[in-house]
Length: 433
Image (tube, rainbow, N blue to C red):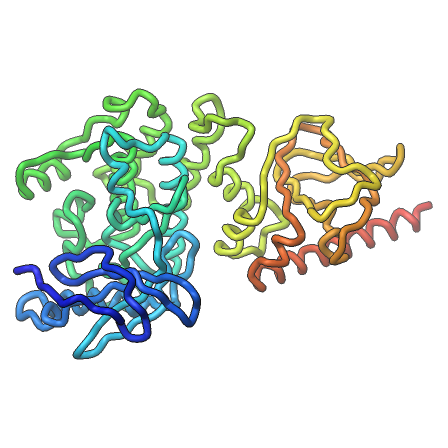
């Protein structure tokens, strides 16, 4: 099918076009200004003649409508937001979140590899995004570096749900949708897409980010498919010496040809990635910092955040700062003035007033929260000292005040529960004395 062309345009609907970002055989993507919401957006616009094409028009239209239908429905910090969609006879376009920085494709070459710890973080965030989408009934079916947008550091956004299959609403599934290199062996032999086929595709992405090459190389599609079904790829460590055995095992299990030997769900995949940060083979170079993967994994286990949904957990990570402290460190001194509160992610701390021990707090407990609840800076009423090695998360009251209403409500509810529990404990102690 010949590549379609379109004349330069100044506006798409109510959006002012700034420049073209790229184009292909079926459409173009533009950077545009959304003046109403004071933000830049990316607009994917289909060429009208493509949707009318005799052979492929129905498939392209179905995929376009599939992605358009997700507008406002699938919102996650690691999935590109879809804000608006218009589909009619004259023009069809999808308005999306604009992510500056390109895709992960540029990091799949030997001369431009990311650090292994960054790869582990990126893949973990992809796992969480795909797990969230799967919770909405979606199987992506086109996971590849070109559909993962890169912001900075390890921040990514999963994009392009045009090929996605909805297990809840879709009655039939078109076979062999996606890019052959990332298709699981069972898809190439006629099976339908599942969570495990998306897991396989992300395993290929991880392989390429680590090795800087594709796991299979072939001169034609038939040869490529034969290798995927019948051959094992060389281990990433053959091309890169700093790939740990644990990391290589994760890639191997994600790309297992036998579905039964592959990760059975996203949670298992994520747990193994989180386990990478433990022990001597941890990919983390700066031990004074706590990785995003460790932070998210900690949050999910802490009682304080038991009722926080996925999106709010990621927001907590955004507004908090995490640091490890050795035993004997004074975190708060009685009488100090501060505007932050703290939540203990790991370890124990002692609460003292003068020389009197008031309490011992453990993982999941908060302290210093009155600076937020009182809506003003004030002197601390007690001292907090680490009794063991600890990981402490710090949140400024001002940052929580600027968080989303849903996140603030969850914190307020938990603070209220904590105050009630402490009042009950104090009353019991008074009753005894």
